[in-house]
Length: 247
Image 1 (cartoon, rainbow, N blue to C red):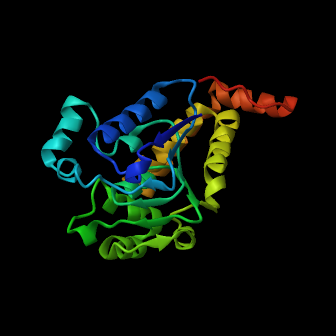
Image 2 (tube, rainbow, N blue to C red):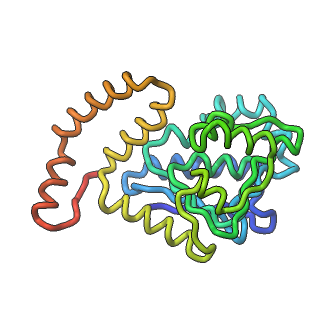
Image 3 (cartoon, rainbow, N blue to C red):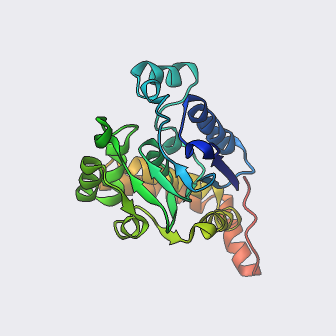
């Protein structure tokens, strides 16, 4: 397991260009490390990420900057969705705009009870950036997504849990440890190969029909039944021990 932390507490972890680049580089490094089987993302202090730093906002939203990310640095905006390692967001405090989008790209979200979330884009005269208009309807449904994106209003942790935007809500002092414990459980008990395929099934499944997804799952299941991780899992259960999955 690896923990990645947004570390600009004096700016409420507002994201500038360097931080954006470093975050994606850290995600890629973790994903390419065979010893890392789950990634936890959190923020320093009382904020997860307040969004784009106002001083960097024009560059972050400039199409020429997106071209730079793709062509010069090799980063696409939807990079987190392309990785094979599960991402768990420990949203320790407020998340708005781009900060909320980073939480949306996680597979599971642990939310501090004190946290407040907002898309914020419409209140700044902006549009739904970095894939948030694609992500939100698939996570919380079209009605809730429209509400959050059109109004830009703040919601509390209880509402986030009710609409499915958060999977766990805990006191702030417990949220990171709980997310890390969840990630450690994935790392210890789940096949990395299975996690990678399941993550791809979910993310790509949003773009395909049910028939295609079911057919794809049939072929993948046949491969997994013939693979070493299934044998190891059955053997470990029979021997009463934790499985020893290969990277």
